[in-house]
Amino acid sequence: MLENNKLSFTRNDADMIEFSKTVKSGFAKPDVWNVDIPFENAANAHATLMQNFVDSILDGTPLIAPGYEGMGSVELANVLLYSSLIGQTVEVPMDSKAWENKLNELIANSNHEKKVVAVQTDDFTKSFRR
Image (cartoon, helix red, strand yellow):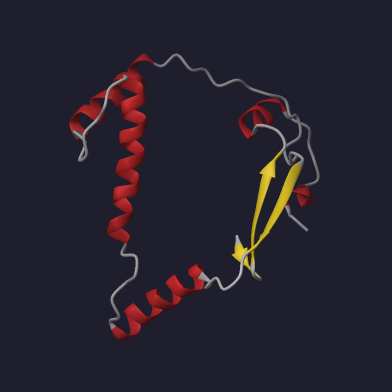
């Protein structure tokens, strides 16, 4: 998060996937490491984008980040995953039919079984950060 002239992030001390698999409490949280990095003269990017969105609706201002451009990020993520699954380089734009076939193959050959884990009944208020 970038605010108040600092870049802040929170890092889990434990691997989140492993923590989620082994924790017995429904609202448990892993220990974390908070990091603050001073950062001067940073515009509030989220507020800038939101204001641009409002201005686009009200006044027709061109969008800084049109939604359709996000599809490139989705395709890149799919290409990375598909490439790792088949062990080959994948060209962009990707062959969407080949990707769909691979997904269907994974689904058909999956032997994943969900495990039922007994959890403790905890106070729901623990789910709120304070």
